[in-house]
Length: 394
Figure 1 (cartoon, helix red, strand yellow):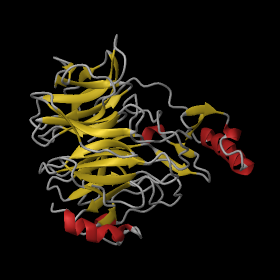
Figure 2: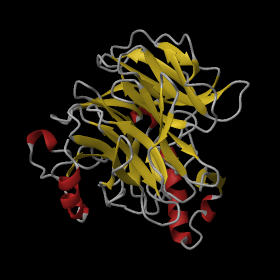
Figure 3: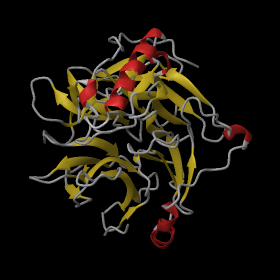
Figure 4: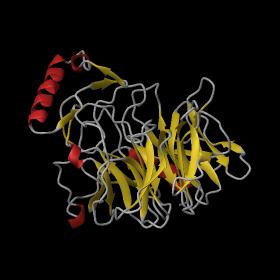
């Protein structure tokens, strides 16, 4: 029921100079991106020339942090225009309290959303949410996921899955014979879960392999269409997103032992990015409504789907639970919002319904460590406080 120490590891990467523009995931002429605003388009072209002179790139990609087919390329977004880009995305909260996330390297956003990107700043970062201090640990990649001991990360890069220790040692290729994304480390640390298309097969599906990349197999047989997986807290089941016939993707869970499948959501929204709470009671996810102009929103559902609560009003995606199951870190995602609160990480306290901005766009001072900056609480989100207090018991 809905109720409203840098790594000593480098990777061969293609040229990051991007001069193409994207609308609805298709390449197009920059002057056609905003046909009603020629001035804004011309400004974007001039911005590109200035950025090139400065050694940066203009990146007008569809910076959607979900269901990306190649593990870190922002292509493959939903079918509507994202005007303003994400700065930080794909957070994962470790059992030991640190948050890994991808930084897109955005250094400036012009009117209309064209972004200047410095490729040297992009990559995977690790943040201490208490001190606000972050450090870059990977030069490239996306969709990081922590090992249970907090010493390693698995991640996607160029349609492949890798794992590496945070000191830069023990780099392993987990999956490369195909196109793979969304890696997730199992709670017992023995396997890595991901989705993708294996060479010689058709359609995205769920796979797992051991932490050295051996023993790769389908999760409960070959069932194309399953995407965006997440382990349950005890590793006994896997939540995932899958489209039914003629419907938007909903969330399901499959038991690893007997392969029994249970439907969790049944809605008109595109449900994705599931994240299972450590206490085993809840699944947080992103709900995208393609029929409206509104941004994606976060929902929290009970593990059996009997309760479903929208927990944001101002936009959100990519939820990840705190170790105590009381908070969510997420991406504040509202493509129509040009403010500095957009496209960065926030933390939501589910009991108090308090939102606090965690990361900040470049050029905006981050005073978190000195507590000089008061928490930002988006107006409107407090309307959900009564229903959360009555239903949620983290």
